[in-house]
View 1 (cartoon, rainbow, N blue to C red):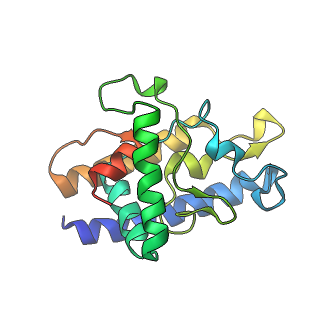
View 2 (view 1 turned 30 degrees about the vertical axis):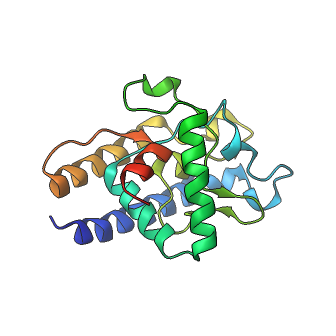
View 3 (view 1 turned 45 degrees about the horizontal axis):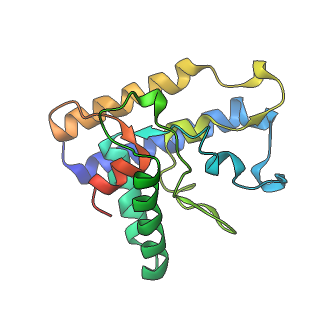
Length: 172
């Protein structure tokens, strides 16, 4: 499958998944708009452990490429700083690779919130009751679907990498 077609399909999958999470779970969570510490969860280097596929990284790079150059340069520098500061690589156990997300812009929020938010970020919200949290299986199934799309696009299984590393390899 051509990458452009796969990106269109990925976007549709992301929108449908986000709508499903919003309808079934997110209404039980605290709103990010009323958060007293905006971005704290995205910038918590002891918490963030988002890994993404090559296709998701390409979608994010496409979104970032449409931003004004000064912002794009700031984000690119944050990506490099994050990779260096947290020693992100493709050989360390994925559960051990935590970092502050370089896609969170203070005063703006998530720079890819509406145009390519990763699955792990889509299912995350501030839930008071643990019973309201979306089951892990929903995230895992969506990631399997994305993985199949990656295989159709790149003709091989691609590793899921820490978000900053995946974006850097996709060439922002």
